Length: 322
Image 1 (cartoon, rainbow, N blue to C red):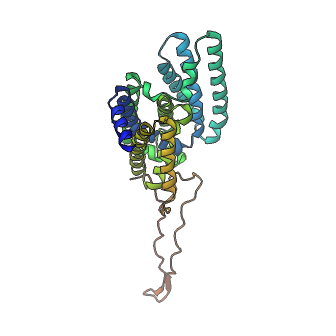
Image 2 (image 1 turned 90 degrees about the vertical axis):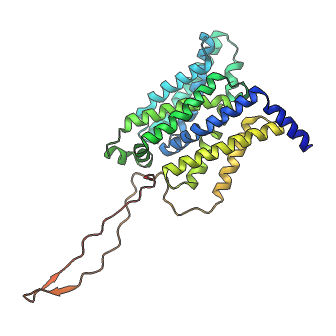
């Protein structure tokens, strides 16, 4: 039985759509887990849900106008990501706006599909994904994300680290917070839209958030968290995809279960003594230990004088500085 399954797996890997799907997952494992690090670091969880609905609206518009539906979804998500950037100052500012955006997007998508009379099955297939139907345009988007996202984090690694650590500290340090937040949100929106075809809107977290959740447990700095996230993403994507082919199961749920198993396994490891990867802005710096009393000594005139030690310098560790 195992030999037959192995032979069937080898025959499947010879098919062009299967190879293209595997290559797409490999590209996704480079850029999308880094997007997950940004999502968790900025605490913008509601954004990904809103972008799923916006992508559905973009696909509906594409079906209506005859344009490429995924291109319309990418453009709609990018514009929405740039539009909500001013609300990302606090997580509370995004919650209500994302709820409104989700409601308007899904209502608009349903209205477009009903009025136009186009077949809605292609739009709602977005919810479950179709990894074997990945085309050249999808590979181009994933390749662009695989290059752009790590390049941006490397180019602006100090500014991004400060922004993820503490927004107020970043602003006081001269980091262009608004511009950088807008760029990151646009990348998040485009990445969510680009990943939807691989696993579906309902399971996109397998490619973005789950590797990041495991990586933040293992990494001590932004660089190590990103490297862990990419490594976990590559391992999860390839293992889950091969397992799905071998068992003849749908790839999306298998990828989610594989990534979830990795997250659970990582959280069973005893927690290291490291600072939280996203410190609160209101956290006070650690107070220095009290200095010992200075000894009294006599001056040349015989009067005692206090010789106090220089004040101890307070240091606050910065976990993303390396």
